[in-house]
Image (cartoon, rainbow, N blue to C red; front, side, top):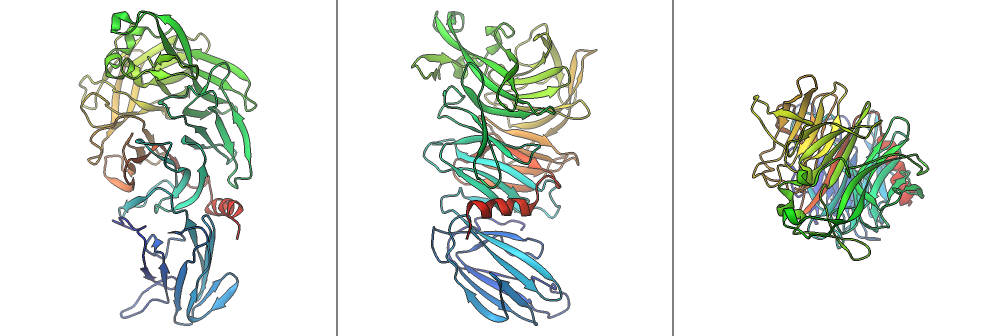
Length: 494
């Protein structure tokens, strides 16, 4: 499917290839050919079993099938030979299955994609991607409340094999150890201050919301859902603090600020541990962000108060006795001691007594800018999506080694993308066990899987202002295609 662009355009498109038996031998011809109206995505290849066709509810989808060389094609339990036509009325989410028998059997699935599903294009190199699935939440940075809201799981050919249309915007989505999906509701603001915010946990069959998690004492933020080995969850919230003097930084003398907090919740929503930036992070650590965004773009609370987002915590990661916390408006990662609440070390941002000295890939001093998505790897290194927001540089994915004895940190791996020259927000960078990276270049249209030394192996590019806040890679063996198909069939039975 190398170089496929704009393959979801409406109209008649041919899909002709060797489905069973291949095209070996000089002058050999395809056993079976299929033409579809509207067009199928992607172009047919023998190894690809899942396809989509964008169609309206109840509209007729036309398939013209030509079976040659004694092949028989079964559709809806009825076997055909020769040339025949099928014109099913498919509703969004429903699928048509083609089973081809010709010295063997193989089944292909064509699912009706909703007309309002975000548009995208795909490119893929000759090297196979290492991830099997990519969990995405495409939405528009320009107007997330007006466009349709989807959670989708794409395969490594760029085909959405599972999706769920939501009535409210969602930002983050993750696969839980149970095989269920969790995601957070997103409000229209840049962080979660809406009292109705929550984390929702769903089955693949969409039968119901398994449960809803809410932080205790203040609204649930949508930036992070981190499942712990004990089955608990780390979730974020923001707590208003009144009568704070920001005049030193150009703000009001008596302001309401938002302290970022992390809460550990049991599956039933009981609070068992929490930590807040209040009392641990000084106002001065907001630094350049006071004038870049904090003072010029206050957040509106539910009661109408204007509040200042002085930290903007956006990710957490367990790390033994510590919890790592990244904060966009602090340009930093903090290691928080779970037992004492004290900050053990700080990486990036304004200098404090707890700061580590950070060196770049060539040993030169470097910094972080509006970073996201801190994660801890089995070897103890950490990865981040360094947006470089406001620093006039391209975003980068970093892997960093920490040396607490020397109070230093070193970049041991860095990945950039020539198609992503700037990043206003958001993003994720996950290094796979096999060495590739899966990156959602924050606030841009691109989600890529890239080789360790750079070079995109696989790229999904959304159209317009649509992007995915994060991209969660799922390795083989975690989710089966059959489970995803069954989930879709349950949500849209024929």
